[in-house]
Image (cartoon, rainbow, N blue to C red; front, side):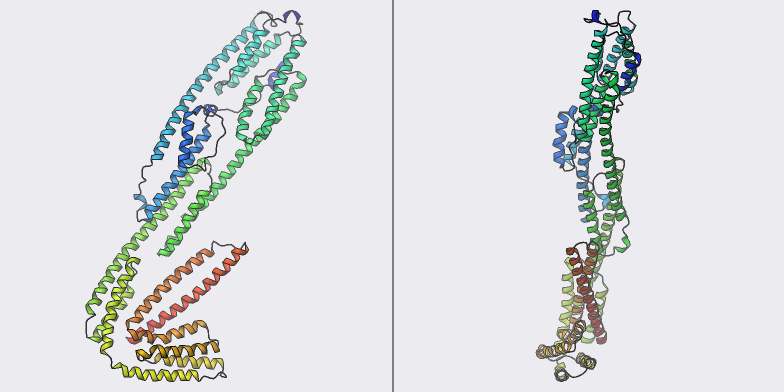
Length: 617
């Protein structure tokens, strides 16, 4: 082979140490890239806010252009799809359990969207496998090409011809080597060392004149300066992952470019290495931050699991407690949805732990309400039986015996537990109607009581006169004692004629209210005293009126207890860090204290009724 510059070249060989230095600085470290990653390095679009249908559309686009799709993007879409899919399953399962189904009997309905998703993923997987196989095949072909280039270099080195005459062929082989890119990763280092070996040997033999050699160095310097500039710009690339992959390509080009002048080699390599260090550091910090965020997410999810697993089911003994705890679980589930992914090796495990804890809760809730429902059904049958007994007695004229029997049935009624809300009012109305009918008939048959009622009327008028006569100059303690004695006397006086009842009670309560206000007697005592004084009025309509009043108070008592528990639960979620939060906290505390006072008053009223019922017996 002849070279057009052969006749003008001086016979001065290039120094071996100089060319070895060129080889050293031209071989920067690279990061191993798998066949999967090589298929595409396109930036990944976040998939967290996609719907399942959006994900299908995106995957169809990827299936049509697999070679330009990033594996990370496909994995992200797959993970996002199943997060949405699992959320829908959890919602369906929760609804199934709330409707009375057992958790272990839940069978998910067929999801056509999931089937389509699986089909598209199968197509993408097949195409990527095909691309991967083709890429590996191409790498093997490239390996053979580079091996043949090394053999040709070896022949040039061992050829007796003048190396200067072979220079054109040498440059052609270098160009061919640079054009052939990917080879099997396991062969990269060995292949590069062999190539560099024969390049160095050729340079050792080569006799170039200074002009031609300087031209070669100059062109290489231009290329490496351009590569340094490109690497330095990557420091401002917003996508640090993309910047890292671009850097690997620049490294490959840098190592494929020949040496520069000896005095510039350290400088150009130091510049390129500094730019590479900046990109690599950003890439490392990005994944460290990502890892830290995922660990934080795992910690939050672990705490949620521990909260649910620590539930004391022994404390959940009624509907209100289960309902309150259910709302807490739903709040934790909503919180879970706002937390991002945990580390990949733990993401599935922590979700399975969370799902199991929730499943256990709703399964036990289902079991509780199933047992509660069965108990309510039994109570309903017992109350219906009591209704039948009361209805069988309501037409009896054996006043004493039947009164005793109905009173006994009413006591038995109080020992029977609750029934379903949709039946409770109707069955109670049926029972009390039968009792009321009997006692109304009994009242009509005992009209001889009227003369006694007239005497009671005169006594109560006298009590009102005594109340009117209490002087303003009397000591508060003495006045309070006197008022209580007169109220006790009033409560011990029997019924008055029905037509006079409202008038006399109005006069009495009006005077008592004035005295309470004048001597500042507490509101609770006032209410309780008024209630005690109204007992006889309640009884006048029917002896069963006391039982109805007691039933009403018991219901009010349960409602206030549930309301108090709700307020106390809400207090645990409030904070006083803001003026608004502090104001709300104060208002709720005020309501809690009022409820407690009202509950105590209702308990005292029930106690008063029980004492009156006992005295009648």
